[in-house]
Length: 255
Ligand code: PGA
Image 1 (cartoon, rainbow, N blue to C red):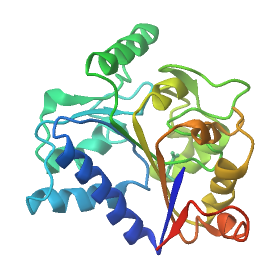
Image 2: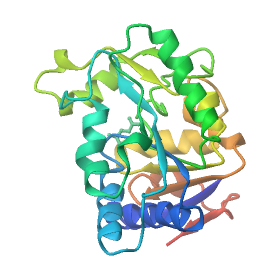
Image 3: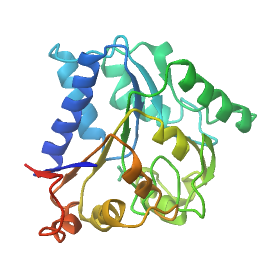
């Protein structure tokens, strides 16, 4: 794991955007795995500016999003499809037929999950997967569990996730109870992973992800065994890591 501690959210967002832009420069037809939530918003905003300034281009990229709420269609303002359109896709030079997001209205969910996996495979696998992390340690919507769920699947959202995501809805009761999410194996097959965490409410989860046992009760802990993971945290989210100074933290770069 490569851990970069950025001064604040803005610095974190710039670094993440630069890594994604660098990926697109090195391989313009990259397959990017993308995430929703509050954390990547600054990264997407920075990427929009970079595209406007001619410093990055999505024109040959393919994108696969981690997840989608089950029961919400692309026109629903709470859907992740809508989120991605608003915050990135409609604002950069992305081709609409190269955008892939699980279909939250799929009649046959099992088929949809298999179709999504097959599409990722057909495009050669994910080059760079962007991740946030839930307070409960989830990545995508892989919630704490007794086993690591392997491939794209239908998930029942944790109470903690429902509460955390209620801020995006008028009423907590409106938060969908299920989602379609890439599995842990899908994520682990990405060639590179870039995980972002911001704010002190993520500090203890980040600490457990890096120093805790690898266990499905904290899904992000599995990243310890991925060969190419970069974690960018701001100082608030790095609070727990700071306690480890003096032990083996040689791989942590503080900027
Ligand atoms: P957040 O969500 O970026 O809104 O904190 C992250 C996540 O739940 O994966």
